[in-house]
Length: 466
Ligand code: ARG
Image (cartoon, rainbow, N blue to C red; front, side, top):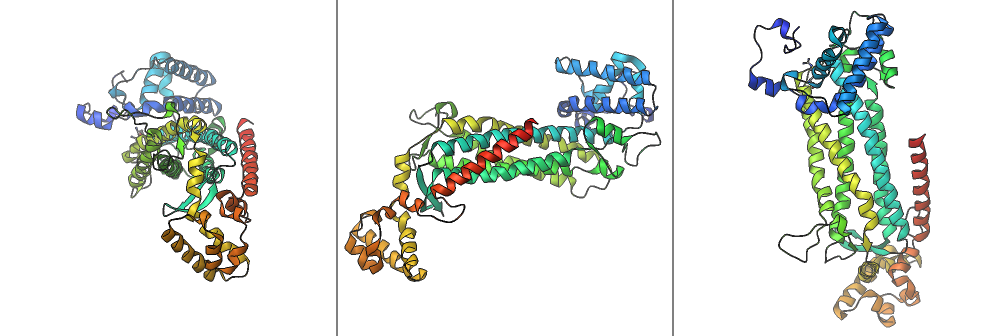
């Protein structure tokens, strides 16, 4: 076998057309898997020695050679050409250049089909861990900001119409809960990725006495159960893409809120200059680009998930070249999520809130439910209470006053029981403090939520370190 020949050239009379070579090659993007490919090959080489498929000396030579290739890669000295076709071939080619013909034994009992699957499993495992850590950092920031602004109220919205006053910390902790579910999804994606397909060979196993459990243990993975499934399965990549998509949706929904909050119309929050950008024409502009991008990138993440779902749909069991299309969407989704998570913690910590603007918006008719609940608690059937307060709101609109400004006689006219209403109840602060139910926006409930959030983060971060 000479240097420039393709892996499979034995069977072919001529070399591939250049245009086909360009279409066929994955090396321009799968070179990113090189560290995983080398790591997997080391485990495989050790297994080959352990099982007597190659001699102990050959096994050591292979591992040492792979260490040298890894060192070159880390020193950015690893070069490839299109003729390498893919990362697996490029690594093997370099190995042979470094250690000679013993390199030709590395591929015994292995196929690129189990090899590429392993590389992607290893990549997905790392990526799931990295995203989980980034997410934890964002959740920590969210809790800190919620803690730092415990007494700020803002309107909660339904239909984007002011609905009822809620605590800002309650609002921020709502997102915390969504991210907590994301965290679980990334942990599940990590364990789905943590399976080694090595030893499945092309699809049906191998006559060589390989030891898939040995290789798996070397990589701190579980071994596969069925060789055909091992080379066909990309569910773990779908799991990770799904987790990225749902996180993307959560980031997008939060992003949309910040875009609103930082507008002049809302004026609830101001982003630090370090996380805003300006306009090339309108000197006054300060734009919330990072949050807009969080909104925008959700579409791309969903696209990445869709791309792989559609690639897999209808593929027969076993390896088909279509599976080469699994990599770019996965890389793109992971990079996209990590880029957003890198920005989020400090962007949250450095934002300022306008408590006055928020409280002003949280008063007025947003307090109407408070009045209806007050009546209902005095025995007025809720429907009747709702109706009476609805009439009062209409009356206020006519008088051009807010609910806080209603004179006592108007209150009594709306319903006699309203004459006893303690006026402090008719404020955003009074409204949130009056809430009783578990998980509500009352300061007591939010304090408990904050405590539990801290405990969760401490526990989870300790587990990560341990
Ligand atoms: N570049 C290929 C991929 O990404 C590697 C596996 C090739 N296997 C094969 N039988 N042609 O999927």
